[in-house]
Length: 257
Length: 264
Image 1 (cartoon, rainbow over the protein chains, first blue to last red):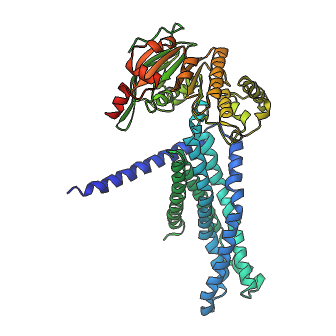
Image 2: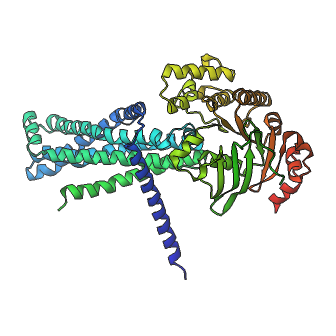
Image 3: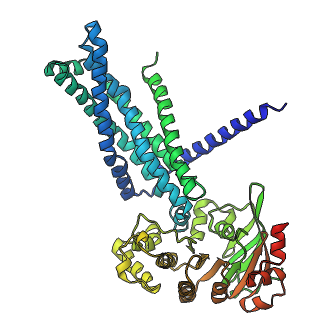
């Protein structure tokens, strides 16, 4: 009879969770613009999130660029449109694959690490200890990670774009017998600054989402080792989904009809 | 419930009135009244899960009480905004049950943390003070640059104690200071607590279910049960309290009013 009740309960739980997340994000962002700032922590997080993600992001980018060239060749060769390969590689990398793949790799590497670290600090009362030592945990723990995420992801994506395009170039020139100078010329021909800029804006948004979800799930973790494990899983899953969903919204906003 | 013992100072350092806190349907604190005089050492005893930690966290501002007042030096801090409240809770040092040392920092950085966050003290100056505090709890300068994970549980507890007293707080809270330590280490910590509190003339509130520890560090003992203070008196009177709950607790008997409450 009362079959609507479970649906309502799920919907209310969803609204509660969304509200909590938005409130957490609002408080965190408000602390980003108010002193004191912890410069050393921000620097350390930039190295953790940005620099140490370079290998995994670089490897992802180079193989993606190579596969893009190979796949588009099998398609375009049938239409005698091989000259489009360079354009396909560079636009796909800068507009979509660079930011999305870098975002997903960082979500797996950094999001989980942040959730585990902050979550362990929560369950071992280190976050309470911060408060009793006159230090705001938002400022000390959350803000440096958010700033580092937003600042370093665009740089990572810029590197990923370059490495990805190089991957496509290497395959085209060495396996598909393209002329090197010609391939580079075609790469530049259709590339607009807007393609790169939108990719970098996406990267900044993804950097915010990954670090926010890591911090949020870590900050609210409960119940020892199991709680911390759940926080890490939830951080990776939720930030990955948010990256893909927000990527669609951003693409629609930038290039939509 | 007996009347609160006379405070040593004229005005109680900490005064709780009708403090209530519930988590969902579960009432944890059901109207706590407690006053702690300046320089006094009060130990709160009570079984696991009776809300001892919740009470301390309410005073520290880590949890918001549902009702009641918390006065520190006569000022109701439960009604204050976050920032003003911090100036009052900064008077309190806290030793956490699991030590809660920051494992991303070295031992001395842990001890000096509040010095650096509250004042614009230089690193070298803060380190000097931290080394002094470490010496006070019997740790040499050789441990100062280690990470907390490299220390044994007893040493971690001592570092946490040094961190709690680093800013010479007016009030120090101890949450299960001897939990998980062997009896000898436990006694060392008890003695350090007595020394450190007497040394700086601080007011101390400890929560524990270790009676040996309670007898050692308390001027006054209060027992928390079912979210209320059911007995409150001088530490020396604990054996002749005439309260069946207290008797059962201090003798650690399975039979008695508390056990029946659990079975019911």
